[in-house]
Image (tube, rainbow, N blue to C red; front, top):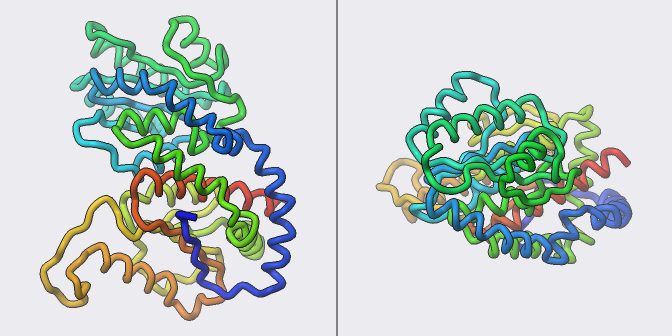
Length: 363
């Protein structure tokens, strides 16, 4: 499996056996999820192929794509931040659901200066923030670019469901289907795939990595142990979710996604090595990010002069080397390189871990 999960605590035989027993029941339920079957049957690959024409059209004429996605914002931002994309591609912004006039004003100024398309994603059960974003951003796009050619609004939603679905049907905007139950936008959803293709990332490699994780036999043995231990530790911490730690800018979105779904707290490059905590910890890391910097000599520098290697050794020392916290649960989710295939594998791993941890917590 492309994702390695390294534990910072010793896990006893009794816990391992209990996890293995619980995992069999949990996995039977997990395989019923639509996003799992979409990956296993490669239905998500067919969806990506159908969206290619949209992506090519947007890349040809737009400089900015704004994705408004409601509750799935954290998932989409994590995936798009982790995939490098290609130079010269449109900028892709995942709108965060703000109602702040200041935030909207800054976005509208951006829209005024560059040809923009709106991609509205909805399960049909829309929040107030999502309806506001759709109305305001759509108005801004048409006001600034009404004379420019091409479609300005694309919808990913059930037909005629919610304000967005009804408006898309009434105005004949291009529309792709979305399962009404997919209100968290799975990592292999149409919204994620379209965003990846617009920014020039390899959606096929991403889906290959996603499938590699979903289909790995390790989920039937050791990997599900991570979810079980997290659920047990959260129960001992009074239901508090984990601290989710990221040391790399490209993976901050993954930390936020995991923390939001698990009821925890994201921490970005933490500095307090001895921070007291009773909750489990997750560290999300890539051994090679999008880029490295070679440094001149300085006190404490990496012997090879690599800033990336220094970051890795510092992060591991912080995460694994705090003796007073050895009894706390903690896992490092790690990939070798942050490319599209590894990003897809990491997205599937995080999503499956969250699903299973929730199942164990509620069992």
